[in-house]
Structure formats: structure tokens, C-alpha cells
Length: 496
Image 1 (cartoon, helix red, strand yellow):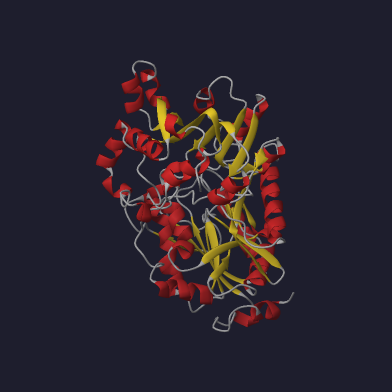
Image 2: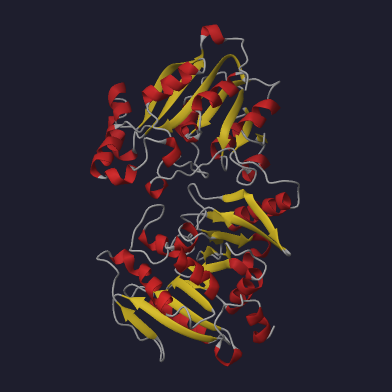
């Protein structure tokens, strides 16, 4: 594809590229010297492109790795992590001079082919949509992993959409340590008032915030073309998280295959709940990739044969239970993240809470698990009541939830009150304050009685475990409550 054709895919308001070629401004944030070898590779890559490319290095020290490379030295604030914010003023100064604007950290490899793919997809998008990237890493033995998929970050099935021949979806972790904008997109970002801002952090840390503001603050939705995933997967050259954080290539491919299957079907699938809070650094969010909870498993009474897990993520705990011979049914967070558990014999019941309870109307279970979900739902009492009818005679409900009134949490709130802004309001924070007393209240109002409560002390406070129940609970950032039906409620099926 020649460049005049490529330029025609850009909005009419763009600047004309020099000599009829695509003009690109690249801002590379490069602190210190540890990534200099990666920086050199990026400069070679951009230099090999048949575009008119200008590169500006943003650093705390002077760098001149190659002729014609500009370096701007200085930090936007005293915090070294504020360096990435320096690219915003640069882009605003030169918004009239380039067709494309690329920001990235100094170890993110974006290729010519990926820029061509960006232009192709951009031509099919709406004005408030931006094609975005996702990072991959490679370990020494050649294995590929995706570090941005961790904790509460996941594909949003409800965001699936088709634009021309492309299938796109939103990944809830906007950070890929880079982004690309056309001139018109940059103009819109600047005009929104959310682009040219002082360094700050909230959902992400400073580094990540600077790279995600176009999506979080400027009115755009970042969409990854899942039907062209390889073209929008950038290599994080430092591979610093490989084998430590994220999911394997097989897991990512399986989830993308599921997304493509869902996109070919009727209607957008419903997620069970909003698992991400609106608090600082997404505190108290649901971990979609939880490791097997040994405390949760230990709380299951002997004799339990059937288990219903409400809020299953990737399913590590559910798989562990199935491997022990229990019959496990799960209501997953969404139909994408739970694939591994489904493959290992965990039966899935898809839908929101109301639909799931309707599908389970004729089934009962010895044990129902609520692992870190009740504090995130709009009405915990309603949800507990809905599933009360699925409890067999003498069944237990096991609730794991954050202990927001424990000593460590209260001390953190005293030290950093701004981080808890809005916590008292579910509407503002997306989370209820959960405590031992609050869970007892939720259970009581839904026809359950808490039999016992078990603390889950932080590893650094493991020395208190077993010394006294009071100390265990006081030092536990999470706890487990085991509840049964009230005698008066036995035999009654709650009405959703």
C-alpha cells in the first residue's frame, strides 16, 4: 500500500505529510541508562520506516544516541515517575506538524506493520474510538506471556463490536506503556481538558497514568482489534515480568477465540458484576486470576459433595475442588475468563445473578461460595437471598471478603485518607464497606446465621495466627464467614 493511499485513511483535518509521506512524531520516555540498549533498538526501528519520523527522547539526563535525535531533559515534578507526563506538552506544541503521534516507554517495540494496521483499523472506527495495543513478553526459553492481564484486568465481553471487517473489544487495563493517536484524535484529547494536566495518579500509578489519559480522561474508548491481535501486540523488550505476571500465550489465545465466537453470536453477553472499584489503585477489586484459596477450601465442612461458586474467575479454587472429587458448578464473572475451569470439568451457568438463579431453580448444593464478590454488588442482601433457595438442608454459605475495619486497613486510612475518597458511598466507589459486623448483618437480613468467622492474616502478620481469635481477626485484611440458614428459613426457597 503506498503512502498517498495510507494518508487518505486519515481524517480530513490532518496536516499534510512532508513530501506526501506520513509524518510521525515519536516521544520516548527514557529515565536513566538501564534501557539504553532497548532505546537504541527502537531508534533503529523507527529510522528504518519509510515515513518522515522525528524522535524526541524525554529523560532526566542528556542523551544523544544517534544524529538527528532530539532530547528534552527535565521532570514535570519532583517525582522521577512523573517523566512520562513530559510528552503531553511536546505533543500540544507540535499538534499541527504531524499526522501521527506515538508515545511510548523506551522498551516498547512498535513496528511499521503495526502502524499500517493502526491506520487501517482507524479508518473504520468512530470518532470516540481509538485502536490500542496490548503488551507481550518472551522468556529466555521462548515462551510468550501477556503481562497486562492480571488482578482485576480482563476482556469486557459487553464491549465487543464490529467495525467493517474488524472485531474489537475493550481490555480493562488501558496501560500498554504506549499509544498512537492521529492528529485529529490528539486535537480532541487536548480539547477535552483531560490531556494537558499536572502529573497525578488514581486508577494507575504515574507511569501508567500518563500513557492512559487519552482513554481515561479524554473521552476515547480504547479498543483492541482482537481479530487482528498480532498486529496490535507490542513487544515489551525488557521482558521484566515474563513468567511472573500475566497469562500464557495459550490462555490469551483461548480467551480471544472465545471473544470471536461471542462476537459471531446474538447479543452482548452479560457480565456478572462490575469487578473493578473506583478507588485509588482500584482497591478491593475482584481478582479475576485468584490462586487457589486454601483458607476457603479449609472452611468447607467434611461431607460436602456439591459446591456452587458464585463469582468464578479463572477458576483456580474451583478446579482444586473438582480435583478433590467434588461436583462443582460455577456462576462465572463472564464467559471469557472462565474457560480453563470449564475445560477441567467445572460446570458453568452463565448470566447475571437473576438469570443464574433462574437456571439453577431445580438444583440445590451442600455449599455455596461467595469469594470476594458481595462487597462489589449493588445489593449484597438481595444476592444472598437469591441463592438461598439453592442451599440444601444443612448447607453452608461461605463468604470471603475484605476486612475493611481491620487494624492494618484503619491505619492506612489514617495515613492516606485521600486514597479512600468516596468509600462511604457505593455509587462513588463501586464497593460497600465490608466488615465482620456488616457481613453478619447481610446474612441476617437474607435469612442466614453466621456460625463462625475465620481470619486471614497478612503473611507479614502470620505470627498472630492461632494466638487468639480476636487478634486473628483484628490483623486480617480478609476474612471468611461460614453461615447457615436460620431455622425459620429452612425449607423455604427465596424468590429472586
